[in-house]
Amino acid sequence: AQTVTQSQPEMSVQEAETVTLSCTYDTSESDYYLFWYKQPPSRQMILVIRQEAYKQQNATENRFSVNFQKAAKSFSLKISDSQLGDAAMYFCAYFNGNKLVFGAGTILRVKS
Amino acid sequence: GAVVSQHPSRVICKSGTSVKIECRSLDFQATTMFWYRQFPKKSLMLMATSNEGSKATYEQGVEKDKFLINHASLTLSTLTVTSAHPEDSSFYICSATSGAVYEQYFGPGTRLTVT
Image (cartoon, rainbow over all chains, first blue to last red; front, side, top):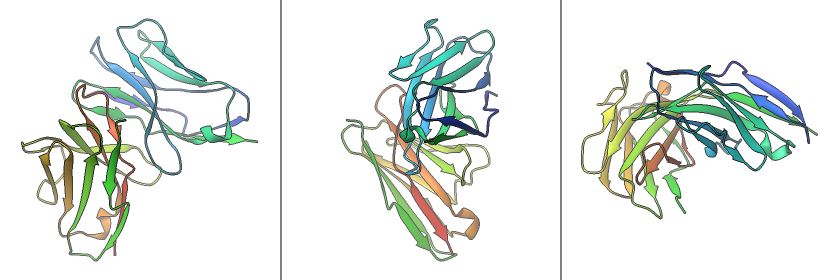
């Protein structure tokens, strides 16, 4: 079964600084999708970024970018120029063809 | 676009009663809807997948007779928690897709408290 591991339960970053959230996953598939979702205190799940496994180029969305290492099964999220509004729970997720499998989440705190 | 709503946003019910949670896709037709459960500061656990007009597919360990899911139309799915108990208290989130199943749009969630 596919698993997604987020080894950092909690991270802190100073406003305007950069932070990287880690995610590893386990799969025997060669084609799949990976995601980072943000869940702010409102608890509304927000898609941050998506990566198709067949694409070698790392996905970017404004201040958010990923470091996708397919061989290492690693999918980290880098947030640049952190803002107070980035404070949230971040979930890494893997799509196995039928459903999303979520990691345990990382709470990101942003200090002003 | 791609807005999903849930109603109610929070509900309190007495132990032994049933409660229904609605999930609606407001501006698209949802061929597939998903129901998740989330405990405080924990991850989302998929409970079931429902396709319009067919029976829901439940994840292992989820009691289908306790968590009744109906996907009667392309814009509405309902989750009914039957004979609720305090341990059913949780945050329930739905998501919907209109095409690619990996592209899920999430509702704002429903907080259920069973007293």
